Amino acid sequence: MKKELLVYSIVAPEDGSAGVTDPPCADHPEKGHRHVRAPAHLPRSVDVAVLGVAIAWGSSYLAAKTVVVPDAVFAFLVIRFALAAGGLAIVSAAGLRRITVAELMSGVLFGVMLSVVFTLETLGLTMTSASNAGLIISLSMIMTPVFARSAAATRLPAAFYGSAVVAVAGVGLLTQTTGWTAPGLGDLLILLAAAARAAHITAIARLSRHRPLNPARVTLVQLCTGLVVFVALSHHTGRGLGPVAAHMSTAAWLLTVYLALVCTVVAFVVQAWAVRRTSPARVSLLLGTEPLWAAGIGVLFAGDSLTAVGVGGAVLVLVGTHWAEPSTPAGR
Image (cartoon, rainbow, N blue to C red; front, top):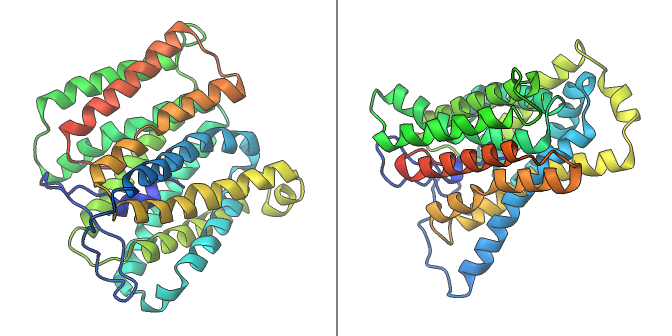
């Protein structure tokens, strides 16, 4: 649970203006803070904290791949979402009594979409490398503005299409690191997850644009909705929750707790804190290093293959996705 749940803090509206849905005030959760000028010593600490989130997100692909196997995907997601929902409920407990019908309805819709993202992403992770997954999923940065502009019936800058071609070519090379063959099922599932993530982010941006939705409460409803979906699916697909939980090692439990609490709850708090102390563009730029960390961690700690073709593909994906960001209004 990464940027899919944190999109509220940095959302650029479709008209291209600088858009930020700020974190809620303590006294008035429905209202956003104005940006506060940070003391001179803060920007570096903010950068370090946000970069830490990007590193955590990058490491999440290997962490999930280490824990989950194909017949335990939904049971694993039940545990992951339950821990994350519990942690976020504790963090946001003070404002839960003020939850609105609009927040509940939006959260359920977004939660169903989120469950599709995580189903595809987690299944794909069991069939491809962590580095490939982290790089291919970054194509959501290309797909999001396409979806957003299609919904708004407007045109994208010409430069965007060049960046898209570069990124797609990079993904093509990534799928051919072991020879020129048809892309693996895992890579294709991750590609579908990127499209689902882009649709999820676009829906949140459009439906939240003119509504006073509290980010923490809507995110919590998303997590709870996803939890319900995965509980239902775990009863009918693969191994059930009980057998999977009983056979998880201590290391597997620690990694799952890390994914749920550090990569979701702590990341949510850090990003909400950061966007009040620095610019949304800077936060987005630092978070955009996630695929680089995913690839590096996969190569260093999982022994993912490092071929010339793979390196070339990784470079093209990173160049394409980051070239696209300044050309489009779609944020992370």
